[in-house]
Image 1 (cartoon, rainbow, N blue to C red):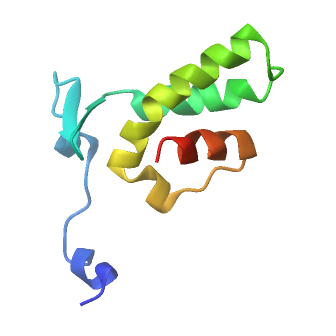
Image 2: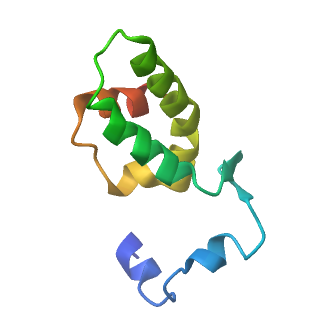
Length: 96
């Protein structure tokens, strides 16, 4: 049975199925994933493009993104999305 046929008859996953109202984190792949992790990573990735590599601001964003990267990997983001930015792709690859 292929993976697509395995998931074919399952209902769509809704946000409240992953994190019910009032819950701020969940365990996935052995890691605690906080609500907002994906949004924070994306916001930092977008800001990264406006900064100069080697500056303290750039380094701070990269450090935060590296901290979030394992959670993104645990939820399977890398299995369905590929970054456009080579810098973001390196950050995610380093977290492997």
